[in-house]
Amino acid sequence: MARDASAVSSAPRQLLSLSDGIVLICGMVIGAGIFKAPSIVAANTSSNAEFLFAWIFGGVVSVCGALVYAELASRYPETGGEYAYLARGFGRGAAFVFAWSRMTVIQTGAIAAVAFVFGDYASEIFRLGDKSSAIYAALGVAVLTLLNFAGTVESKTLQKIMQVLLFAGLLFIALGGLMAGAAPGPAQPASGGSFGLAMIFVLLTYGGWNEAAYLAGEVRDPRRNMIRILVGGILAVTALYLLVNLGYLAALGLGGMRQSKAVAADLMRVVTGEKGALLLALIVCLAALTTVNAAIFTGARTNYALGRDFALFARLGSWREAGSTPGNALLLQGAIALALVLVASFTPDGFSAMVAYTAPVFWTFFLLTGLTLFMFRKAGGDTPAFRVPLYPVVPLAFCGMCAYMLYSSVNYVRFAVEFGVPVLAGLVIMLAGIPLYFLARRKA
Image (cartoon, rainbow, N blue to C red):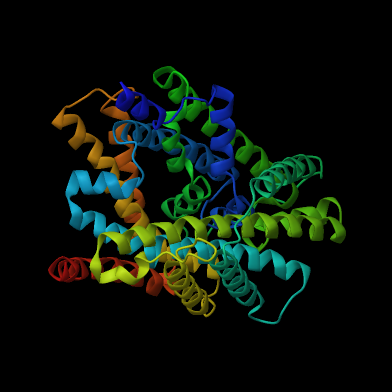
């Protein structure tokens, strides 16, 4: 009896209500990307209708993906996420290559990309020369890495304050843009763009819903509420994104958005003048730094786990007692992210370069993770607390979209020649994980 009581007490408690789950999903998804990606999406769509459709379609894809991840998390709720699913579905080799890619491409590339959003908006406040955005990005990565190394992490209070400011800023942008008056005349069709390329940035902005799947073990009545939380949360995000983008279109027009490096700041100049643009730039900077800090924190923990599992990376598996941080994992991650910022500073747009670097690798593992659901269903076993509705239509739609996004992200080379090197570099580094796995296995 005592053993049973201990087992029950150590299990996750179902404390989250329907409204709690929806708020958490919105917080996970909405970040600094909505202040940068719309101008790039506008450059790759030919009309207002196509531009808005891309954001609606992004919401639909995110719902399908979130449902797939919810069942995966319900089947295997242990820590590890994609690493655990890939290990169970495709073996330790696939899990190793994922962890390697996350350390060198996916997570570090995402840190660098959001750091460039910080750099673009910090440059609106005070410019530091031709490489201003890259300088700010590097400073942000370095300072936050050192703070995490020392054991200083963001407080829940700061996170909540930033989320409230972010939501308030987005609503103000949307309403201000809609009330600003008529936008400039119709824009010329985009040249050299592609809808697939636009969707890369749309789905980047919707990123974070995969984290929501881990709520399955803590939600009350998960069979009924998880689908409501996932669909309701992503619908709320989609509605907010549509409202914000309508504001951008109303104030700047599609042509004005295409030419903007900091679209939200440019909108605020139209609505309230220079002072309003500076205030918004400050809010975006804080939001971007919060996102970077969270990515640094979680990414280092994944690298620490890789060091514990494989002797080849044993140094990453050491825990620094002073400050209670994975010190070596943090320093290596910071060094890689800084190197990526440096390389991307020589491209026309650091944010776009980092998206090009990470996107093919990111969608490769998203596709493989989606495929594991079919493998687990075929294998049978216990019925999970949550199952994807309309199986196999929903997971097939998600996997099909992942395959299309993988194709589009590799095709980035054709539509944006200047970013061809980052695309190929990301793929080469991912593939380098295969011989590394055999080396790691032999060393073990």
